[in-house]
Structure formats: structure tokens, C-alpha cells
Length: 241
Image 1 (spheres, one colour):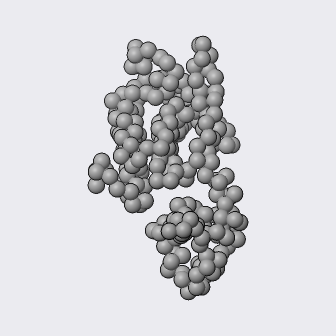
Image 2: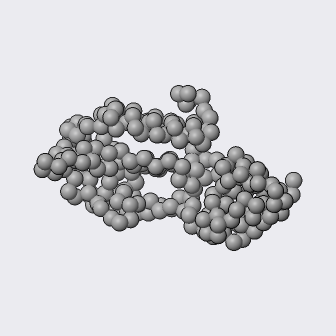
């Protein structure tokens, strides 16, 4: 097999960018890929992710839109570390397509008004058949706010990603590794664990004061996660279905 006959793993993502940018029809894509304009079924398979085109077939789109794909596939994550008793931020860049992003929300009370606020976030990136799994907590969140149900100090930025600190990244795990990380996260919440407290380096006595996550937060997370894996056609013996 020559180099240009290798499968292009980002076929679906690249075509979506090209269509968004220039409005290509399936017939147009087929011709640009060196196929007959009637090969719309082949293009449909590329667009829905059932098949990947070859690098040769995607050459035009890689040249014209590859730079857009590269930017779209890059993500910046901020960490807040404790260094000599002070919190210091650092940044890490990861590449991949966001295939799952879920916010864990809790009740927020302000006077007589009840609402909800996102306090945790679980993100999965897919990168060349491997996965990056990122766990985050809301910037500005503290144990006292968790106990009181009032979140007046959490971050509220127009850039949603700027509202979050990452506290754990599992890089380049396979599907089984992804499920193990997810199950550990889910169990930690159901067992009374609090990632916010752990990140703030509190002792066990302090941590026990803010055990408030329950099945009402975990079930929506679990269902959404399994549903996404099902729709992506991912398979593992660790899946419950």
C-alpha cells in the first residue's frame, strides 16, 4: 500500500469543516476526492464516520482546510497546583476531537430563588483511536460554598472553558482505560468523595463535611456517557450493554 492509500482518520471532522466553510454538496466532495460525482453514497459514509477516505482522496481538503482542523482539534487546559502553600496555575495543550463533555450540576439557592450551577466537568477527547480524559472543577469553588449551596464566588467568564480548573488528565488510554477512569470517577462521587476538597488538599475530617454528590448527579452523567459511546459504536466488555 502506497503512503497516499493510508486511511485518513480525521475524514469526518475535516469534511464537516469544509462543508461549514464552503457549503460543499456530496457530489462536489466526490469530485474533489477524485471519484465520480455519482459516488454520493461513499461520501455519505465518510461524513457519518462509517468509513474513512484515503489520504490521497482527502488531499484537496487537507491542503485547503487542514489548518482549520488542526486548530479545532487543539484544546488548552488550566491546572491550579499547590506550591509552597500557594496556588500556581499551569497550562497543558491536548489534541483530539471532543466526543463527550458533561457538567455535574448542583442546587444553588439565593434567597427564595433556586437554580443550579455546574461544579464539575468530565471531558473526553478522541485522538487517533485513543482517548484523553479530563476531570475539572469550577474555578472559585470552595467547601463553604458547597456546604451553603450559594456559589457567589465561582468563575463566570464569557469564555466557558476559562471557568474551569483541571485536576486530573488520563492521556492516551484505550476504550477499556476510558471506562475504568469513568467508573472510578462515578464511584468516587457515589461513595461521598469530593474532587474539589481533594484538590484543595484538605484532610479527611474537613472532607467529610461536604459529601453531597448523589445518584441525582451521577445518573444523568452515566446515562449520557453510555449513550454517547453507543452512538459512536465503541465496544468493550466493560460496557453494561
